[in-house]
Length: 98
Image 1 (cartoon, rainbow, N blue to C red):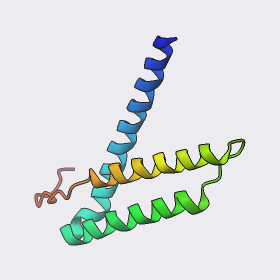
Image 2: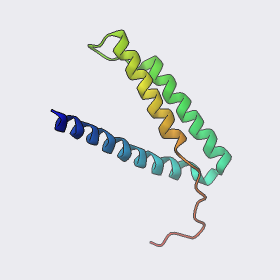
Image 3: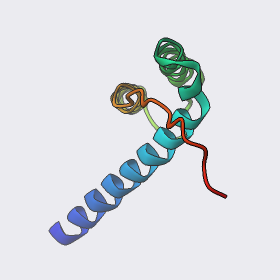
Image 4: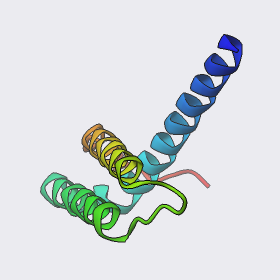
């Protein structure tokens, strides 16, 4: 059974890292050209919107109130951790080769 637990933990960690990297690239590409202040404002807006959505719209079927609250807290922590890990990167002014 411990091997199954490690496998599940590894899969969960790999999924989180993959999603983080995809989101980092999407957010960077969408917002970096507007400058650091706008980038930071967009990240904050996304975080606040995601957290609000988790607490107001997330409904889990077949769970009790304690489980739903725990999932919402964990999801909120993941959102905050993920989005606060994003940093502004100055766009490369050189034209991209095609």
